[in-house]
Image (cartoon, rainbow, N blue to C red; front, side):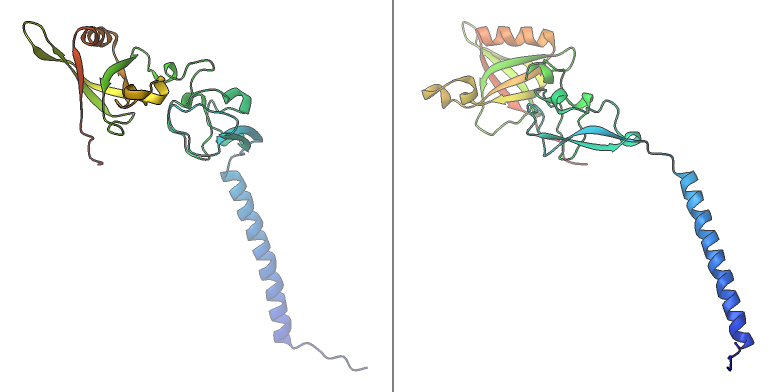
Length: 219
């Protein structure tokens, strides 16, 4: 039986192909080892509570607004919650974005009330009797408070300036109806204790007016 011989050139090409394949395999393994050495271990997965949608500041967190997920432990933020029951009923002290891990710095203490949760240390929340038009002011705006006094010497004084609006309370939230409900929303302001005293005096003996500061342009 006749057996065909391989040409010398074909044998050379075959040998070169085998050498190239071995070299490529060796390079690939070496590259994989270098990548493994460069990337630290990510650790095991840990449970993490995520926001299922945007949660505005001041909102009460519930099991309907968060869900449990997981992520590698090395990427889990410090203070992250790992159980939905731990965040249920807490107040968001900052705006939370959909998919954001819920951490202790972004929510209130376990039993803080909805207003107390938003008050920074050293300040007070003061509900002011001045009435503003509906939708004219939002939480985060800043206002100046003026008081007009009657009597023998009518005059107007500036009681406090640059106060941050913590909450805007609609009449329905205050339990008002009828003509009172038509007066518009009222404001809860963040104030220092001494400013709270001046505001209380002004509300007791004068007529309160607020002026609204302009918002700075985006830089």
